[in-house]
Image 1 (tube, rainbow, N blue to C red):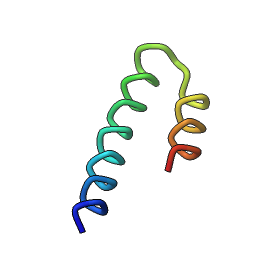
Image 2: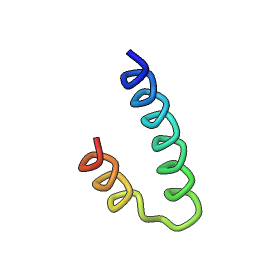
Image 3: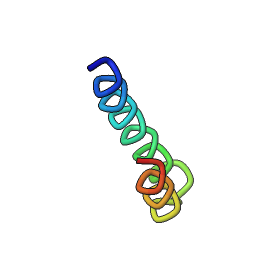
Image 4: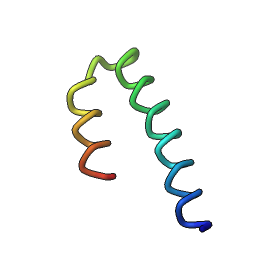
Length: 39
């Protein structure tokens, strides 16, 4: 159970991180691919 919660928390953090990358460095595509392959 705790593993699923940890995964959901990681997804939330990764989404925020991806959003920051999009705004700051304009690497939306790379960040999205990284998030997809990580999950």
